[in-house]
Image (tube, rainbow, N blue to C red):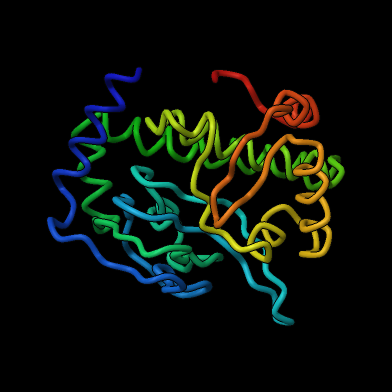
Length: 226
């Protein structure tokens, strides 16, 4: 399966625009509730899918990391219900959804790659549906920090087992895990005092008692297939 996905990824990238679209922090790649016709492969930076309510409240639904594909729902929907925004300076290559469909019809690896990415997105959504519905604040934050660690390791960032860059503000973390910024700050302080994890200058650093953090997160972690 992995070799098929790698081949599909190479074929999709070969068909994408040769010059990446460059984004600054805060740039909107896909506008919420607007028509959009492109899929993207992220080359650098972090992006988020989010939905903003009329009163300004925002939910960050999922984070996209380098090498991942986003915007696949353009194949199925003319208007996009959510926005995709750059959380950091980023770059992404794109392909029109019609060209992506034609390529997938010819190349099974591309079809499987798109299906796999949708399955991963659904998996993340299922995980966060459980966490937002059943987890307490400690469990949500612990699961969030460890899920990112595991995703980065899977993408080849071997150092993420000890530390990794986290280019999110406390407000953005709160918007993702469904807590207030005050609550997030209080939990981070508690985690640091218990020597489980610290965030220093936008870097997550796992401390001596990281196993305790893993125990807190364990009921809310999806470890199937990892």
